[in-house]
Length: 101
Image 1 (cartoon, rainbow, N blue to C red):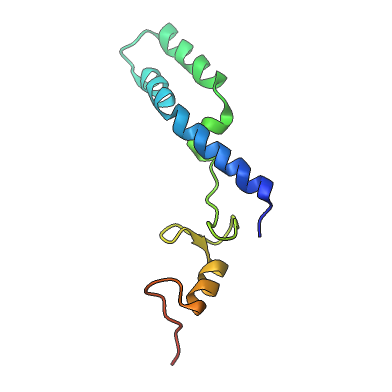
Image 2: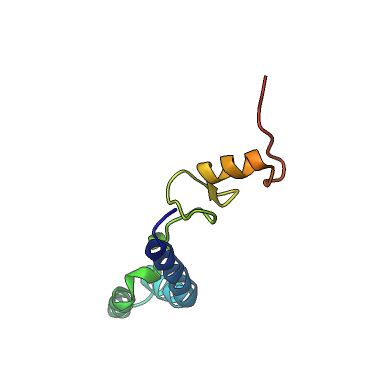
């Protein structure tokens, strides 16, 4: 089980990203627009830099929904390999069957 503080921190980051996504996208569009004057693009760059770092999507860490483990994460299932194995053996993941030959 991961530290509760790490899991909560990641949840806070997800909320910040969702809240500021539109604002960040608008600022990035201004920065990339070559038709605008350089002063306006520079002001947009400064405003983007003033925003909280945790509002950036790249700061989010994929974590297992079951255990909070940050590594060996399967995106399709939303859980780590260890949680997948445990729940698969118990028959709680649809379509997963223990292999034998």
